[in-house]
Image 1 (cartoon, rainbow, N blue to C red):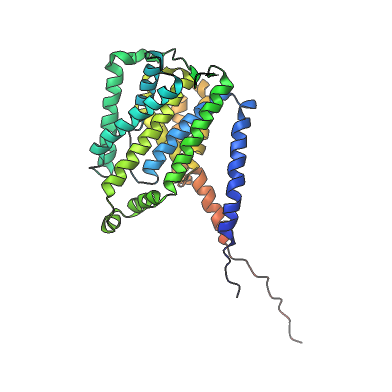
Image 2: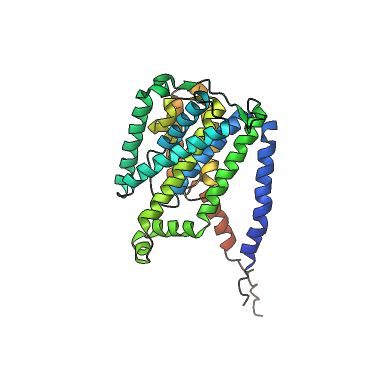
Amino acid sequence: MNLPTQEAPSTRARLRGPAIGLLLLLGLLAPLVVYPVFMMKIYCFGLFASAFNLLFGFAGLMSFGHAAFLGSAAYVCGYAVKSLGFPPELGILAGTGAAALLGFVVGRLAIRREGIYFSMVTLALAQMVYFIALQAPFTGSEDGIQGIPRGRLLGFIDLDNTYAMYYFVLAIFVFGFYAVYRIVHSPFGQVLKAIRENEPRAISLGYDVQRYKLVTFVLSAGLAGLAGATKTLVFQLVTLTDVHWSTSGEAVLMTLVGGLGTIFGPFVGAVVIVSLEHHLAGLGSWVTLIMGLIFMACVLMFREGIVGTSKSFWQRRKTLPAIPPETPVIAKA
């Protein structure tokens, strides 16, 4: 009997490097065939969805208020760049730091609850952030902050050049995506998966579950803030939509469509949702109905999302036993 070999993991390891290189090459060449601003929007929302997936997909914490971190970072970055004269890199760092700090405050309050109560606490606190953005004098209320300058990166790279801005956003996305990848595949990430699967068992093994949850919440909030601050410089404006609960719903939708608990799923979901919103924009309010139908279809027919379903299908194909050829029956004389 032939014993199973161990070639599959090494094959995946050999293919991982060329696959990542191919994706980077496609990202570098994308502005030659696709509108750069459209691609930058995909990168921003892909990073936002990846940040949400880190919290929900790998730690099992369902947040309904992640737009608070995206929007707060956007407002801080926009105000710092336009009113305080910060260069773009410091504006993004300020927005990311503000989102991480807000994540620490919200996390300390929210992780004391579990399940739907955790989700409702995050939603309530996010609505408080929305109210502050509506009433605070420096946010521009319903008009938002407009005319935000992109400035010069490191003092000499003019980000008003579309291609320079594109590669800057691509670098930020790659950094954020790699950060999520390293977190998930580290010992810290393995503990997160253990907490998601069986929290009482993780506690019995001696892990400080509350601390792990809080650190994950802060990391997720910071990455969402990085996406929000970058989005501010891309579109040069911040509006109340960035802190609205519907933006949190988009993160949930992108993650579930792409594949919850997968690395590439949130980005694939962002590509699908942003592309549909772009091409269906002429339908007006019907876009919301179409998005709802897509969400229902994914939940009913693709429970693991696009990436998760494709991965499961491929694994089933590889594990199917080979069917031996039929033995011919020789009739006796």
